[in-house]
Length: 270
Image 1 (spheres, rainbow, N blue to C red):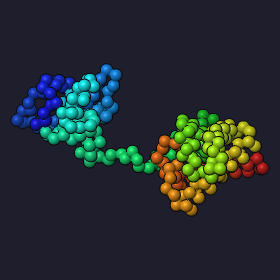
Image 2: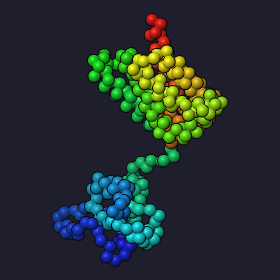
Image 3: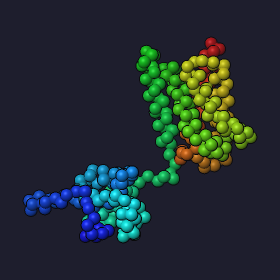
């Protein structure tokens, strides 16, 4: 039986009557989590939701002050809350609870292409929405052009969230940025401007060379770093704080810009 950290600690759930001999008692769990006037622990809410989804009746103990929380952690020798107990055994925090149920626990240091894929998916949906609103045939060249322009705008926006962190990561592999540091800070603005011009069809004689230059240099830089030098780097394509690996998907951003610039140039020449 789990000993509470101190006598008289209140539970937010009332005692339930004992199950009759003909019924099975519900699975029970004891959860300790921070619920303060200025802070409610999000992982405590996640742990409560997970336990409920697994069919557990929860004895929900609120730690309502910092002193109460510190006393609980000292009593049980744990560094964090929430803490879950099942069948007299301490399971641990939220990640430990996920492991207990055989669920995947995300590694915060693991690399993933998910941020880039999310941008591509949102850009595709917006492009289709614009086609629908403007009565443009779906899935044509116009859709593709809008998709690429929207990708450029969205990716530039993510880079501009923390320009300094982006520039620092970008300097790790971009060939022109290594020769001229200000280029690393100018890149997101150039990408944003070119994307907006391409989306609206304005000033193609400005948008085409800008996209061709930044996309071409970026593609060569990534190819050299990944496929020639065999370096394992993180990509700054969605900003400086991401764990996106530098590779084929990252290369797609630059290839799309070059392709868009060449297509627009061909349209002007026809």
